[in-house]
Length: 84
Image (tube, rainbow, N blue to C red; front, side, top):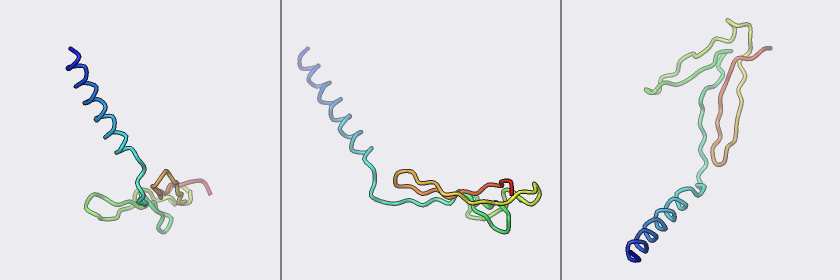
């Protein structure tokens, strides 16, 4: 019984150690463009890399505005239609 307990402790300890190892922050910086503004349009990119108009802000009487958010080692750019 002591042997089984010792083996379980070793396995769970090494699993916890590897989990901690993977959760460390990376030194790399990632920049993602979720969407962006172009001629008062909110633009996006599909899975084939083709750009398309998500929203035409002029149709809503609004202005396209781009926002940036920083989270840990990642910078996210995204756009939305907002009131003028």
